[in-house]
Each structure stands twice: as C-alpha cells, then as structure tokens.
Amino acid sequence: MANKQGLYIKLLEKKEWNDILILEVEESQSGFIESAQECVIEAQTNAYHMCWNFYGIYNSGILIGFAMHGRQTYGIIPYSRVWLDRYMIDKNYQGKGYGKQVLLLIMDELYKHYKTKKIYLSLYEENTVAFNLYLNVGFKKTRVVDSNNERVMTISKRQ
Image (cartoon, rainbow, N blue to C red; front, side, top):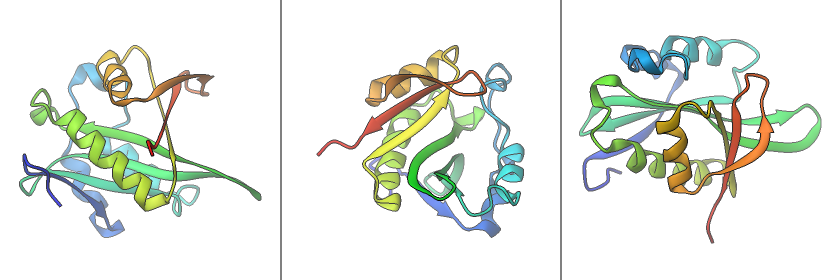
C-alpha cells in the first residue's frame, strides 16, 4: 500500500533480488554500506540463505532503493534479534525527502513481519546523515560496537 506520496515497500521474492543491482549510493557514501551486489551475494550464501530478506522501495512503481533485513539467531539458544541490516536510497533519488517516510514504512512492516517489538541496526557514526535520521525516528544508541566498529542502535515499538 502506497503512502500519500506514492512511496511503498514490497517484500521481494528471491527471484527478484537481482532487480536491486541497478541501485547505487553516492561515492561519498560507499564506505558506509555494502553495494547492492555485495548484499545479494551475502544473502545468497549458505550462511545467510534462510535469514535475510529484501524489501524493494518504490515511488509510483519505480524502484528507488532497498532494505535488507532478517532475524539473527544464536544456535540452539531460543533468542533472536530482528535487524534492519541495510537500507539505502539510490543516489538519483536522495535528497527528495524519502528517507524518513520510507524508514517508517519499513519499521512498521518489520514489526508485523517478524511479530517483534524491537528492531536493531548498526552503522558508522561518521555517517551523520543516516545516524541523525535514525535518532530522529526514535532509535537509541547502545553501548555496543560490533566487530566492524559500527554502533548498534535499537528501537522498541510504541504501544
């Protein structure tokens, strides 16, 4: 379902994953997120095959970005976290006010899709545009820094 501006997200079937390969970020952002190609390769490897999914981000039917998400589990321990692992808007569609609108759509869908009350993500704090976007919608910094030196952030669903 599209919002007032024609923005919507769609859970992509595995056969549609290659559709996102046309998407790119600005060169100045390339150190902050893996390329679409790297994301698809990662999701297709055996280690990630069952836990990663993609949402295509559309504006009036035109693919403008993607989000990669999944449930991280820890072996036999009955514990898991829902991660918004990647989120990007193509360089040709950045700066048009889509970031926050789409992020809110994605968050609502992740809460529903995974029946969770909490979402995690990690990012380089030097990525100030993304960092401020996440803070603006309610994500909180944790004290945790992951193995890539990215700050872990989390948000809980409001009741």
